[in-house]
Amino acid sequence: MITSLFGIKYPIIQAGMIWCSGWKLASTVSNSGGLGLIGAGSMYPEVLEEHIRKCKAATNKPFGVNVPLLYPDTEDLIQIIIREEVPVVFTSAGNPAKYTSRLKAAGVLVVHVIANQKFARKAEEAGVDAIVAEGFEAGGHNGIEETTTMTLIPLIKQSVNIPVIAAGGIATGCQMLAALALGADGVQIGSRFVAATESSAHKAFKQAIITAGDGATMLSLKQLIPVRLLKNAFYDQVKAAELAGADPDVLKKILGRARAKKGMFEGDLKEGELEIGQVAALIREEKPAAEIITDLLTEFNEARKKLSQEQYNF
Amino acid sequence: MITSLFGIKYPIIQAGMIWCSGWKLASTVSNSGGLGLIGAGSMYPEVLEEHIRKCKAATNKPFGVNVPLLYPDTEDLIQIIIREEVPVVFTSAGNPAKYTSRLKAAGVLVVHVIANQKFARKAEEAGVDAIVAEGFEAGGHNGIEETTTMTLIPLIKQSVNIPVIAAGGIATGCQMLAALALGADGVQIGSRFVAATESSAHKAFKQAIITAGDGATMLSLKQLIPVRLLKNAFYDQVKAAELAGADPDVLKKILGRARAKKGMFEGDLKEGELEIGQVAALIREEKPAAEIITDLLTEFNEARKKLSQEQYNF
Image (tube, rainbow over all chains, first blue to last red; front, side, top):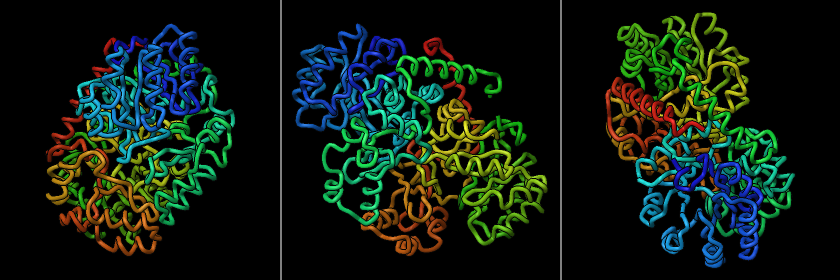
């Protein structure tokens, strides 16, 4: 189980998400027994520094930072993380060989996010402490193989010897139980925490998640970096272009700049990019993060008790 | 649990699959304590009749027929099923209101395959006895919402009061346990049984499944009926056309006729249509169906025992 590695109570990691997971959400989750992550992907170095300091002031429990290895600022972010003695870093969307040994030498635990067998093995070779295996149903950036959590977790468990954290399709306690049944050593939960009270997602975005039904999201922009989006006017525009055979350059132009901020942080539900997982269909209300964790554990225990019944003796 | 409804020992249904599941596979699964289904989608009425008779001769246990409600022969197939007193029918890809009451009046149990909330409710209204909720990762025909099993099962359980059978992403006992953890009342397993000794899939197709890795399949032909295919030359042709903005008529022309037979039954791995689920990546050998069921139960029991350990007490 992932709890002893991180020094946390429950094997629940709150995903580091751009525009949604700052110090408030991360520290609340850590104070509630999970591992809260600050999402650095949307932060300038000085903003990240501020969030780390506030997070340290708000909790004496372990917390982490998620760093997508995509942006020009990465080196600065890594330096701040080391200087501020952040206990855990989750890296994603890049080569784990680049920063892992430096982070580990500085005493930082390193976890890398992957979506296929090949990168799981590469991450293990790079020396990371654990991996997140993220299924197709997850919100935001995603793998090109489109492997879902049901298939990905057993496959990755067979492929590496380090702990595997399941991500994608987990918003309730029964889904958490399912992930552990598949062999995961812990779960990373994103979308459910986007709709937490402490999330910095715009109120309109949270409301859109709460009213989303099945089929409300779609993996999109596959010719750039696949990303799961809540369907809206912007998504419709991308889809129409894709059906007409648009090439990556055309799609880049449609995407433009700062769309994720516009959608998730500023609440422009038409023209903004709204990254969320399929589990949006199961999210019905905004709640404090501590209550979300209590709910997860209650549901988990109920589902686990049910599975222990005699009718499942085969 | 689905066992009492069907009068079977284990909540395991072997999916009715075109070109793969004839009387041999179905009767073996039924004799092993599951529910075997004959896949009528690839059968002329007189062929189905022969398979039903041979299945009845080979087992005195309940078995069923899967009928995709897509083809002009459907009326004839339904008449044969009623005349031959087949105990269970799984209908898919069509309106469940059309045949359910007639089948039920004749004493046939009816199960309908769905991939979203709306059709789950419609099937319940039509009076079916249970539904199969099929996730995005499943092989063959699939829903347009692309909802994966992890999200679909809890969602559908909330939406209907009849039993829900999970399909998609299930080839091992830990995946079966995960499906039941999600709330499913049973599981339908397709791909794993395509590679059973008793499956009528061509040897070359079975071998292609056994060597498939992650990312080897893709949901394709979304503008016609979405179908999950093993990637091959035919898939590449479809994909290139789609990326170039081909319309449905062009795709229909590329698909042509009898491609599924060519691929799955005749073993043309280049030009044939090869329908298989993402779990192909977990399938490593051809095995007798009875052993597959034994494996599933052994793995299920191990995974269930693991989940009952103290470390999962939260």
